[in-house]
Image 1 (cartoon, rainbow, N blue to C red):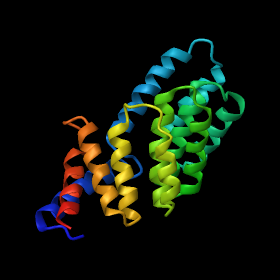
Image 2: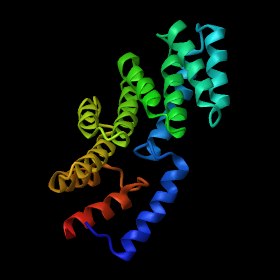
Image 3: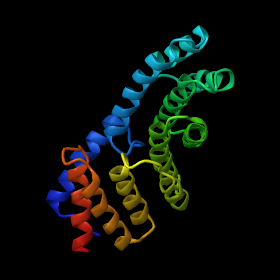
Length: 209
């Protein structure tokens, strides 16, 4: 599959944006959702939660962009001592991102699997699934990524799920399946979503092939 010059420039522009926000996210919508849910969860759960849990979570937030091992250690403390709290699931998501950014994909995968298995919030579970599938694809595990995406529970992420499924199918050499997935993504993504243009570029390239 060959991209023409204009398509290559569009892809280069998108990759520059993608690298700025974290290549293991399906789109900035996940980051926005995580930020919103973190704020929402903080306010909903702060009352009655242990001061220690709040302190550990605050320490994780302050350490974002720093040592992934330290962030994971604090996230593991929350999972061990406050596993039923919103702090624990959000701490694990931050630890997963820090690990992925550091190239520690197995550690990221473990944190995301924990969120999927333990979070009481469906949106948070699906956000974790998207990130998990991307990490699995990066580890050359396309079948595992497809299985993860197939577990999505809500329709709110349908466009992002379809796009990532297209990427996985393309990686497996299934151009026809990827084409249909990208069409589905375009139908379900908000028209002003930042990744719509790139999905269209990928679809156009496949239709030329």
